[in-house]
Length: 393
Figure 1 (cartoon, rainbow, N blue to C red):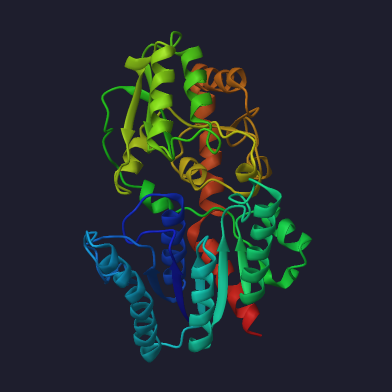
Figure 2 (cartoon, rainbow, N blue to C red):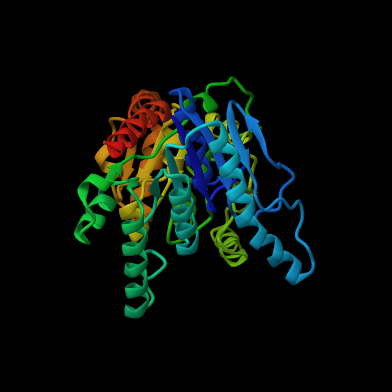
């Protein structure tokens, strides 16, 4: 079997965001299950990576530009060439292997349409990846919602299958008449091997860590900061470390102003974006891995990849009880769950873990067992292969 992972939401082989991590786990899992895997990064990314192979996985960057050209017309000419370069890449792949499936990972209708075109000229299945609610960017007005629904119907009609990260998304598609046979639940996936290496702590102090986008509505970083402020005097040896960047400069500025206002400027460290290879060391040496995600459409539909990475480290995890998180995680059993949108509730869970750390480590061990089983990249890739084979019948 040969599969192509195609889209404009991820980088490869580098990058550390949720989409990139999911593609890494898909690609590695499929490869280790005997599938030939090709990854095509269709986003407009200026990189020196070029085309290559890493750990048996072929990757391509059809834009083929190392830096952004100053000329507007030249830039758009290369963006147009990207389509022809991608067609040429598919031709090269198909000359060596028959492509069985294209896994399309994008939020853009034109990219989905191009993926459908590629599937038709190559005579292969087209499977859409859906890791977040497809209408989350179409909520501003009734007209925008209608646009979003039309987009969902077009994309769903043109593809052969949809990989949904949650049961919520499966129910969403079913409610709009998408056949059940097209829908397949693949929860968040994680590569435990990334976190198995023995590494020294990158910091000289004890800390609680959050790793991801420094956002308000999606991940509630402000709630985490305020919760930490509540317990900071009780645990003067513990600091808070935030890894990542905001969706805008304004987000980070507001968070830093909040830290200043709460009087914990010397206790909170903003590390910015880190390389994907650097992140495991920070997570493995934390006292707590925290995610104060609030209630939202995003939380209901998705399942944070950072959470499965947290779990697989074997470090105590404090997370809010939103979306499908409580389907897999139970408070005081394999994680520590807090009521969402409550600074006091999250602070209480942080305090409990730090005050009962031996018990917390046992809970963390069970969390790791869960991540190594149901969230395992290789196990889930095996299920994807079975699903692809079922679509071929």
